[in-house]
Length: 358
Figure 1: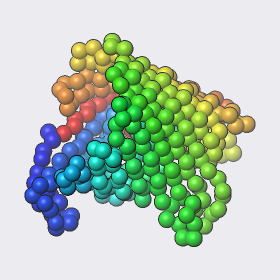
Figure 2: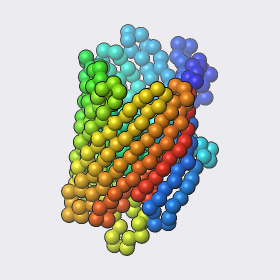
Figure 3: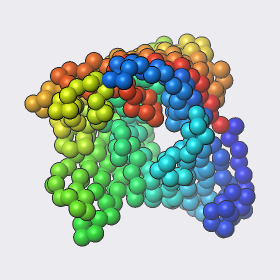
Figure 4: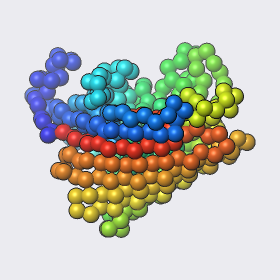
């Protein structure tokens, strides 16, 4: 249940300053499931995992009306592990943390740790699994690490112009004597009207650091669309990944017992294809997708993923789910079947769990 609180009751703990006109919304997701993974070098494993469908979280967001159609907005969001009760080791509010201004006429400008336009495109447009469950597109598409969220980021989101929206993100590398090292730039433009939703996203990552100058740039381009036909919603996406840190990372912990010299490496030139469907009927929804990773390097380490899932809605906020996915790796590729929060250990995985939002 979403709960509105007077800002002085919550924000006072963080800033000591509040306005009677401001309100804070407390929200979250609790997700836990049984995961069975097969095909790893250590054998099969069954575990209870948090965040299979959606990462478990606790968040606070709010806004203040500044007048003239302008508002101040903020969001802070913490990762929660339902299976152990721990928070994310990366920090208390390591998921998202930003503050900004929003105008209906001019758009929104936010500063802080935020999702990349590329990741938003995968989760909101391209993937029927929403980057969750065993069928997550994150298993093969470049949407992990800095391609998911970036720190020190400035994001501008345009107003909606008859269904057309745009997004521009700039992440500062914060490296002394260099304005480009560690810098990341993202952009997206989309059109949503009626049953059609289409979006083109781009991500550019400079891989230089304070101590290592590689002059290597990783770029990702993704064109995605979905169309609601009524009884079936169809999904289609094409991607191009070029350069260092531009591809989904294979599991390099030797999941298939390969010699150390034959461990899989991340592709620096690949093409991605995703085809999927979502079929709702009553309280149920069936999901299915096929993803192909076409490695264009000399290693030719291709991979294909087939996935199917089932969701049963007990209410608007609570559902039960089950999913299964399998990856076929070629020429020593080592991609694994994970879920929303884990990379997985083998080439097959089955999930059975429950998700509740409030």
